[in-house]
Image (cartoon, rainbow, N blue to C red):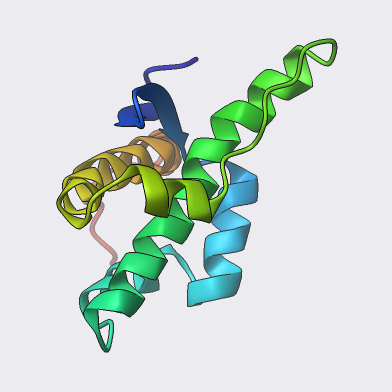
Length: 130
């Protein structure tokens, strides 16, 4: 896949790429009210179980983006999508905590291009308004 857009994690001995796509961004926005609200939601989860549920949901969403992209390009041999229950069975809470960095990395990479394109262009920087 595209390392400029993804971060890798291993679940149950299988390598998965976490990718923030437009589809994933829409799902996150629907669930949390926007990407900027995601961090607050994860940090302010009422209890440990709820925080684990949210991390499992997010890993499933981001890991499935790379599988969906693969399936789009390889219609003759599609791969099965990951489900939250698999993540719950194949990981420990400690592993989930370590995946937070990969989640953050994939989201940063997914939004970095948007930030770069907004900052670019011919607009003068630090122009004085008179």
